[in-house]
Amino acid sequence: MSPQDKQLRDATFLVVAEGRQYKAVWPADPDGRSGRALWAVLIFTAKGEFVGYPDPPEGGFVASDQVFAAVRAYLTDPATAAQRLRAGIRDCVTALETAGTRSSLEARRYVGLMGGRPYRDDIALARHEGRCSGLREAAAITAAAADTRTLRDGVRGYIETLGEWIAAEEKNIQELAAQGVGVSYHRGSLRALLQASEDLRTLVADEPEEAGDE
Image (tube, rainbow, N blue to C red; front, side, top):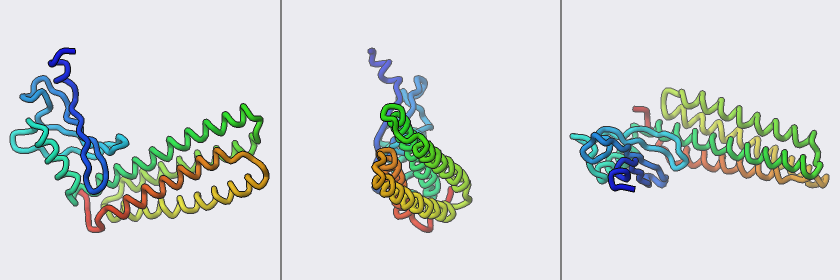
């Protein structure tokens, strides 16, 4: 591979701000002085959700230290708290959906290979898919909130709902285990719900109350 081919690749940087990891992408641009885009840098969460664009310095981005400085300034600016919070919400929803899909596939394999209890497992699958659908809908409504305080209130609502789902899943696991029914799917579901709840609590705890939108 020639040096020119390497130069035309996007440059990627990992940046830690306020205890969270983000990825900054400085796009390649063959017409730019540095071989990179002069005016554009994109910021993503560690899980790949888009966060926003930092303001370029006077004259544009020509060196990596300028990119780091602009990204850090964006990620610590109270005016961008709402964008960061929205990206964090999308992270949690995507992770829960992914975990739900994975555990659903595991449950279907269990039914097919082990001759398990299709009726019970089908109900469990439908319930979990319903949870993911409900969380997506709630996320869409909250993401359209006019200010950060409303977003934070929406996150607290998520946490309360997840707490109810967690309690129901724990009870379900105990009842099924007492009947000798396999609960591997349900344990996977419980882990996903607990992780989502923990991630959302972190979002609420870390963002400043007074932060607003740009």
